[in-house]
Length: 166
Image 1 (spheres, rainbow, N blue to C red):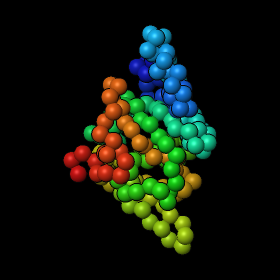
Image 2 (image 1 turned 60 degrees about the vertical axis):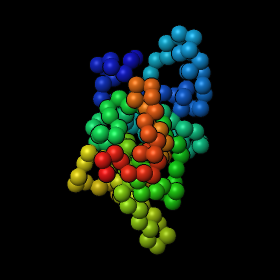
Image 3 (image 1 turned 180 degrees about the horizontal axis):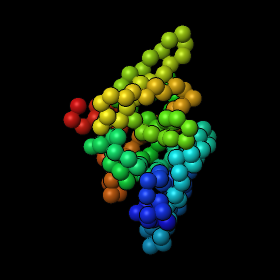
Image 4 (image 1 turned 135 degrees about the horizontal axis):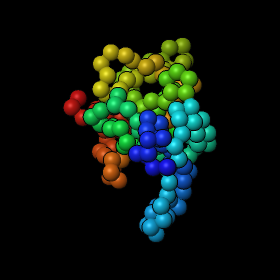
């Protein structure tokens, strides 16, 4: 199914061959062979991200929603790498669970460590009120690249730098 297919609209789309660090999708595209996206819901993305990132692999998926506008737009492709709460920094964009089966990519605004336990406070760039409290168990990984129309966006905005307009 293609990402614009109405059956897929509103669901994250995982790109599994690239997620596994396999360049076969690029070879297939270069040869003219169509490589379909895999449409999965939020729970499926959480399960896939948990398995791949937990094994040390990266994951690429198509973002859905508007909470990170103007930096990340609906349909941009995000690359996520494994990360720990201890390793994330203020300014990083992280993929985390927000409730059961609801993955979100939001920017870390603050990191708090108390009695040996750390958590992050994050929210979307387009949001002004709500902060997500992200515990270690809720962190899936860190966004290291955002792509729009096949071109990488400024990665400094993803990896620990302020968002555009900040």
